[in-house]
Amino acid sequence: MYTSHEDIGYDFEDDPKDKKTLKPHPDIDGGWAWMMVLSSFFVHILIMGSQMALGVLNVEWLEEFHQSRGLTAWVSSLSMGVTLIVGPFIGLFINTCGCRRTAIIGGLLNSLGWVLSAYAVNVYYLFITFGLAAGFGSGMAYLPAVVMVGRYFQKRRALAQGLSTTGTGFGTFLMTVLLKYLCAEYGWRNAMFIQGAVSLNLCVCGALMRPLSPGMDGDDPEGKAPHHVLPAHSTESVRSSGQLGDAEEKRGGPGTEDSSLGDAPAQACQEKAAHRKDMCAFRLLKTVSQLTMRVRRGFRDWYSGYFGTASLFTNRMFVAFIFWALFAYSSFVIPFIHLPEIVNLYNLSEQNDVFPLTSIIAIVHIFGKVVLGVVADLPCISVWNVFLMANFTLVLSIFILPLMHTYAGLAVICALIGFSSGYFSLMPVVTEDLVGIEHLANAYGIIICANGISALLGPPFAGWIYDITQKYDFSFYISGLLYMVGILFLLIQPCIQIVEQSRKKYMDGANV
Image 1 (cartoon, rainbow, N blue to C red):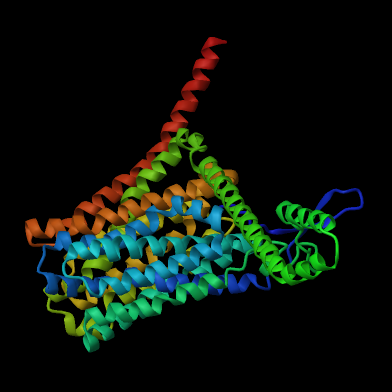
Image 2: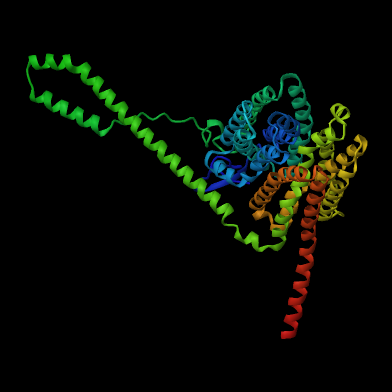
């Protein structure tokens, strides 16, 4: 998705004619590439899985701080929204520092956000520590995990991305159970503290993101041992030695020779100290120069990659796709945040404790990704048709959800939501169909950012609707209606293009 100085997928070999020849890297589609899948899988568990399980903590925050549902929901939505919204800007860190360092720093920041949130005194404190700090750290760790899988795979890229993203489903199931247990045994504050310690494993996942470069892990690009060059003497030390020699020549005789021998150790120490000082200054200047060049190169690549893509917005079908993304993700996120409280309102807590509804969504979501991906790969099936049918199923499930007041009915609808939301695995393919392979990375980053805005606004909107109506029903109806409008935009745009093309052909024929 992004190109950095350290993540290059090819080795260079010297040619007798001083030309560079490309050789595929041995780890592409195999070897260490599967460690990238494993690393990305655990990143999805720790980040996306824990965010989808925040409904457990949302109930605890409501009881602790006694704030409105709309205000409290901002904590979870900020964390999820910021993780996705900052995606395009994390590219600057990736271009400058590389995926490995970016992911490790993100893991540290995410863990720090969880730990500091354990000492929250109000929801506004959580906005900063959990919503912004932990959310930004999640974005720094999440995007490199997606990028590195794409770089390590060419022929099996779809399979690798599909396997790694199933971590979201597994993580939602595992983190929901873990957070419920920790909150029941130790309280929500200690639960967040422990989860912060668990999140440090993001640093381990980041350390596994070995860059695809000839000089990987400090090896010389040409496979040769590094040459240790002795540092050259500075001009000051040479000048001082020369002056010393002249003085000694002028001073002749045995007495002066003895005195010069007595002062020799002190003069040698002074020369060594001056030499070390000059070398430290030289190394510092060299490091600052290299860092400046790296930052400028990274910013240039990031700027041209995003702000140089104005042609994408002349594609009206892609603009309609962005409009769809602004409303689609909120319909998927709202149930995860508010279902734990909904089951409390329906007096279904005991049944939900045995097998949480959010865990049903997570498990079926895994199968949905696999099944929809296999169906979409069939030669006689259109990816767009599978994508649209899954969206219609999800919208229908959102409309039906408020009508169910039994655990069995809610479980069936949650299973439908989980399966139909498997269309997320088709989003890169659909985006490529719209903009082409050359603009896929930038276009997909924009779509992810639009999803982040949707995740940011959806849960607080549902909370505000409840505060006004004392029901969650209308929030599902309104979000489903907006979701349907986004789908209709996707359906209308091809019709408009066909009409315009027909009109253009008719006008050209009339002019002839």
